[in-house]
Amino acid sequence: MKKPILVVMAAGMGSRYGGLKQIDPVGSHGQLIIDYSIFDARRAGFETVVFIIKREIEADFKAAIGDRLSNIMDVRYAYQQLEDLPAGYTVPEGRTKPWGTSHAVYAARDVIDAPFAVINADDYYGPEAFREIYGYLSTHADDGQYRYAMVGYLLQNTVTEHGTVARGVCVENADGTLASVTERTKIGTYAGGIHFTEDDGATWTDLAPNSVVSMNLWGFTPSFVDEVGARFPAFLDNVMKTNPLKGEYFLPSVVSALIAEGKATVQVLKSHDKWYGVTYKEDKPVVVAAIAEKTAAGLYPDNLWEV
Image (cartoon, rainbow, N blue to C red; front, top):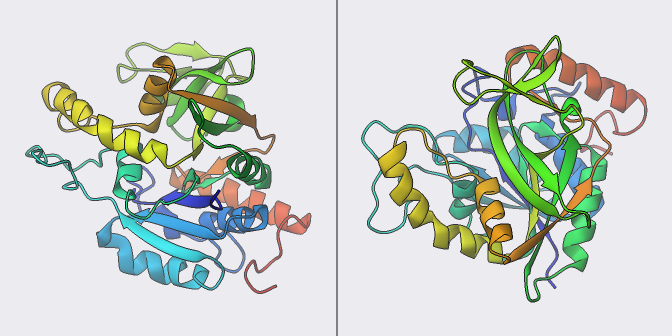
């Protein structure tokens, strides 16, 4: 079995955040959130990282992180571009929005050659998550079914007070595998708890604070790349008719379909670490303070890559 690799989705331009948040420092020596994820992943055992970026940010991204980390990890790149579609399909006129997280994996199809974990570039996951997912990927292979995994977090530990967030809300089976995951793209807090809307705020539905949610930390075998590619045309056929400018090809939708078809199981691993992220500019001081506290407590060296 090949050693697991880490795949980092970093193609988003941070439209809600108001800048290229992937390269906005949060550590005392200019470290980025992804520095801490790479540090945690490296000490968990990962030695190869694939960065999925847009070609438009390539120079900035490499200067800010990729070139520096090439001394620590085997660094590969994939490019998520709107026009990277199956033969016979073209980008709808007026479409500027990326095609989503499954399309990000599709974009990396030529550089994923081993079991892999997928993360977002702008989320802090904590060291436990990387230990769990690396351990699973190192010991499980496809047999009669695809054997995948995800790291789940408590919803209450993954929200921000400064706006809505997107989360995959999970339902588990009795054996700890994933029964279903539903992408909720607008989850927010209010005085009475946490709720979501699917109609731009006209109506809201409550969610339990202890709901298990996906933060896009998945563990897959290479079979998932094949499934994403095989299912992409059907997604496009539907979205071109229903929502050509904004429809997205989400990882949870492919995972849920594979579970429903009996082709895959997804073990739900748990992290007790609190998630941090910079979805909005107002989130940054919270992240900076949390990193400083963890560094002071000895979880991270003050200067990550000079130890």
